[in-house]
Image (cartoon, rainbow, N blue to C red; front, side, top):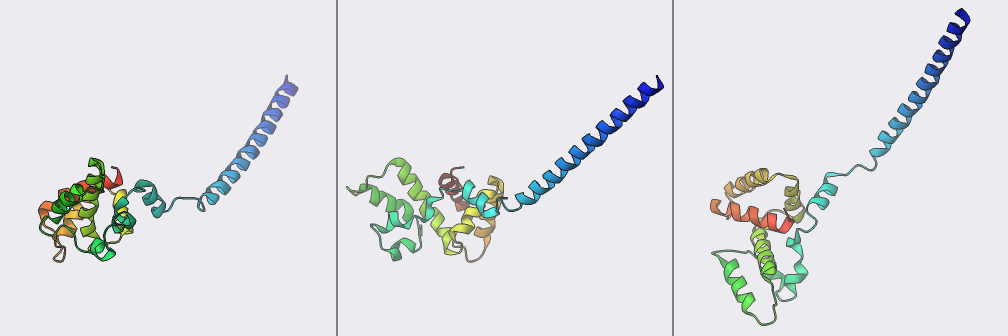
Amino acid sequence: MDTRFRFIAGFLTLLNAVLILVLCGMVVNLGAEVTGLKDVLASKQDLVNVAAPQLALFTEDKCTSCHTERRFLGQHNMRGEIDQALAHMSALPDTNFSDDDMAKIHASLALMRCTQCHGAEKLKLLSLKSPEERMEIISRMIAKPDSKLSPDEAEAIARSYELLSGF
């Protein structure tokens, strides 16, 4: 009985040693994989590109086919000009804009006012924020002395952003 006990104890000890070596090998491989992940982790810009791929605000070629770049890049929605401009454009015979197109054009022109101070990449960064955080940022920007926006426009700007970014 004593020999049998020694054999079982020796066998279990050897089995534990083998399992510990296998486990150590797995931990070393896991460490190597985690180290390799640093090369493939998504950057903040990657997340922005995934979150707001269709922020179609800056597709100037659609607007500059009819308008000069100077007119396209000029100030928008001074004294309600967006609604007047869209009404005029929709009345033209060769525009063929759907209601969805008109909503996106309206949203683009509303957000163009933000581009007086911010570039496209800065606006795309808003896609990483929650709707509440976006509204707070928009309100903070409107409160700045140089904004040329009134506080009642904050909700419209937020809706325009959501329409163009898809959420």
